Length: 326
Image (cartoon, rainbow, N blue to C red; front, side, top):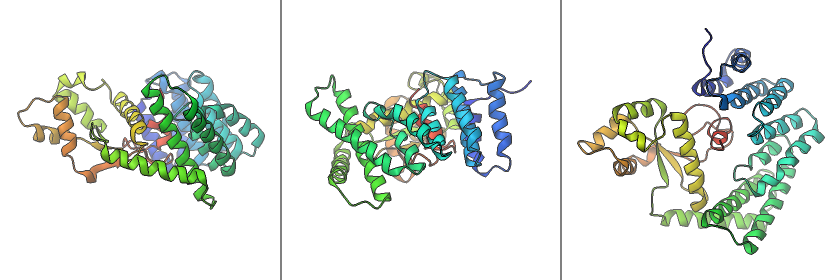
């Protein structure tokens, strides 16, 4: 009987695909599992198809990659923003510029409402439309700055989210303009000032660590076996643990703009040695995290095309970035 396709296996395929001697076999494994209803978590159906699309794109088969991205959107119509952005980028790479820009333009308003929507401009930039990406970022940044001056936010959380979005838009715009060799302008000055302010805020922030304790999969599984009471502090699965960690990092970025954030990997044996005879509770976990060597910190967020911070080996854009929106 064919095996079920798990999240771990999808991650593994995404991680090994760049160096695989037979990427077609990996695509077949992913697509066959979807066709035969063998995806262990139905919520991963779109993810599996998008990983397959990415493999095909890397192999230069843009047309088939587009077909799989389109199918991923149809499979999960209520959670298709990321898939539509991927499809828009593929259309641009195929030379179907009007269609690609139309697809991405429909998503453009999200730049002012969704903290994760900056990946839309990444698709533009990676498809040879960096100038358009800068224009979109400029318009979104202007709108959000104007709104911050006149809008009464319903809560501190909403205000923090808006501030984090302004920070992210300004920094991405600054980076793109620098890559294009464009001269510094007033928005770039704003980006510099925001980064300096965020750095100072992070230095002064003493109400909790800027680095979160994260358990790699083997350690997470062993952790809950050794100390079952920790199921009250952690979710039941590793996938939920890394998604929860990603969301916590996104939330924390509203305080310091993402400056100084990261994860540090824990180990069961290390925790046991640290705690000794003391009970393993949340206070002990916090103290253990503080005791870990700063050299072991993985900065967050990674680049969109860099390896994901969780250690899966997959690209961040194909791993915890989209998973955090679920």
